[in-house]
Image (tube, rainbow, N blue to C red; front, side):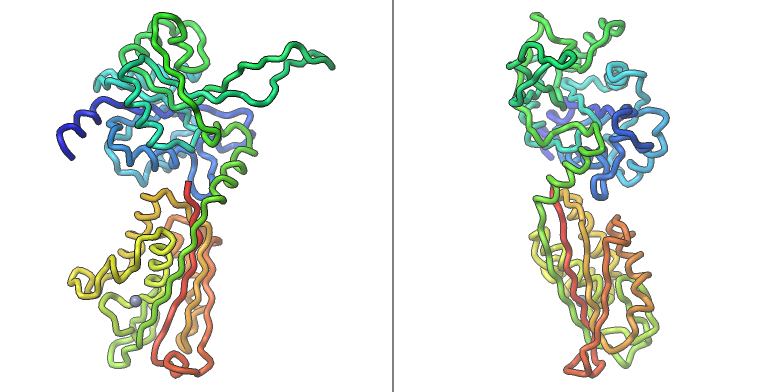
Length: 389
Ligand code: ZN
């Protein structure tokens, strides 16, 4: 990171408003913590902005009722930029709490974002960071294309043509929005841009994005599932190793130790994990396990394949992938795989942060045909389906 990067990072803070209780969402789990596939909205937002080097401080404003679920959500993030702040009774109060917390670090700009809008993009954030230099505030808008009508009893009143929906994140010069909140805390505003909505301030409206909707109703979760489902990639993996009949019996399959002959291999020879890794690398389009972990590299000698799976998981997260399902075949005459498949699923689920019911493990013999059929080795195949936001 060069000097210029550090300078820019210092300037920008990002507040996530995660205090809403979501009465319209009708669930005990608030909407910002409802799972979209395996991740909730806060995780999806963090997975994006943690990759943005322009953001130096991340403040999550929470509702004390949901502190446990927030802590659980954050437990996997080790990034020091993330701080949590207790919110107020309203959106406005929560926003102000976040801004007050930032006083000690004095960012130049601050982005304020609804915790229940998971579909944000760093490209848009960076564009706003560039634009804000010339303005006091930038706010994304979506022009309403449907005919909006007001109804009274059984009759429509006048039509409204120029109606816009505001979105977040909205970006502000920190000092300006902080002062506006401070001076207006006894009046009610529905979002932060509204506080600056007078001639004194330079507001820039940007074109918003339809996908950046706010999760409000249960149906909205389905909408996100549908968006995600459109961006799917598949990967296939295969691995085979010969048994080493001279060695002690310590076969490893998807991390499960099995009382059977181990295999000839540079690493620990876990065919299950190796095939799975390759299917992940395939879906991500980043080559194969042999290219990433070369078999002449001493670092991988007898390496526990847990390491390779954790590496693959990190790559999925970096590319904002969400695993849909995994299907595996283990091909051997012996041992009997069905005795171990449940434990294997547990290991995969734990390492990849998914549910066991997303994993299927099948076993087959080779009907006494060929190398595997004669009991000389073991092979595995894996197919994975990953969605991308
Ligand atoms: Zn292998």
